[in-house]
Amino acid sequence: MRFTSSQLHVIVTLGFCGLVSAADNWFVSPALPAIASGLNVAASAAAVILSAYLVPYGVLQPVCGTIGDRLGRLRVLRVIVAGLAIGTFLCALCPTLPFLIAARILTGCFAAGIISVAQAFVGNVVGHENRGAAVGLLMGITFTGQGLSSGLGGIITDLISWRAAFCCFGVLALIALAGLFTLREPVLTLKTKSRDALNNPTMPTKSSSHISEAQKPFLTRALRLFFGPHRAVFLTACTTGIAFLGIYGFMGTFLSERCGLGSTEAGLIMMLYGVMCLVGGALSGKIGASGGPLRVIAVGETSGLIAVGALIAVSLVGAWPVALLAAGALGMGYILVQPTLVSLSMDADPTQAGLCTGLVGLGVFAGGGVGSSIGSIIVAAGGYLGLWIAGGVLMILQVVLGGIALRRFMRKN
Image (cartoon, rainbow, N blue to C red; front, side, top):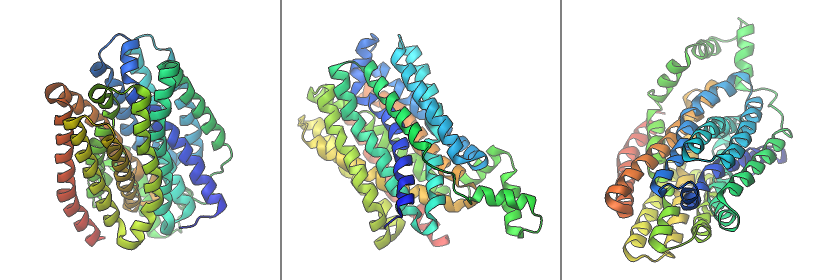
């Protein structure tokens, strides 16, 4: 799939914004031991800062997506990226764990809309026929940051401190904000069409029905979309977040405790996650063209199971090189599944694309926060091996039950 230079500029610029929002959370994973030591708490207790960012990051995505639909996506993006930068710098100044948790919640609230609003913006720019490939590339760039930040954050943490790492990612957020001022809102968006219909009573009845829907209370519209005909897409997003992001969040600490690796070594291994996100994002369009979206999701889920198998092997034998396979397979799997769900969700109601993509973000990232919380309990009770086994069981259920639900959905649509 080839894009025009202006379309590619939009995708790369918004991808970098997403990259910063993903990096801002996930560099924390290999830095957790240093953060825990600096704040005089146990590493398992400090893990709550992962959920403190991910839960609001997921929960508020539909809200931010809806605001973007109504007020203009570029305007909203500029505000929330500025808030992300401010929140990240605040994290560097926190003296205690409670203050850091509060700062991470604040940062997650601002960052919440970056991905959902960016996805809708890109979909608006490239059109329906190129949407899947564009969103795949956007998310590939975004979650390259998730992997690369692990290595960069680990190196900065080891060489200077975890506080310096937060400052560095705050600077990246400011750079992303500057990039947004090189973009313009599309001349004609679905939001604009709906506004025109409000001012023109002669518009077709179908447009009037969309406007009536848009005027309903937010929660009513969100629930109707989430549990409507596209519910298989949104529910699969939930299990994807719990399984994939829940597992990824513990890899840094696992490599440190089980294999004796430092923040730098663990972070460098986890960088392969980001590399494979970029590769997977570039390949998703080709896989989809040959086998459709269900093939893309199936390949991604299979890759996730390979990652779980590799982590189980590391737990049993303690050989860290096998973790390279786990990180790469997990990145490839995630980036094939999540953007495909995003693309499918936009068809639920094209006039509310921001809300649709936000609901997928809610499922994935709130699911990741829930996965991190449940993972802490499992690790405390049964160790990391129990966590990997639980994640593998959930992925198998997603392959079987989720696959059946998605196939039924595709036949109806």
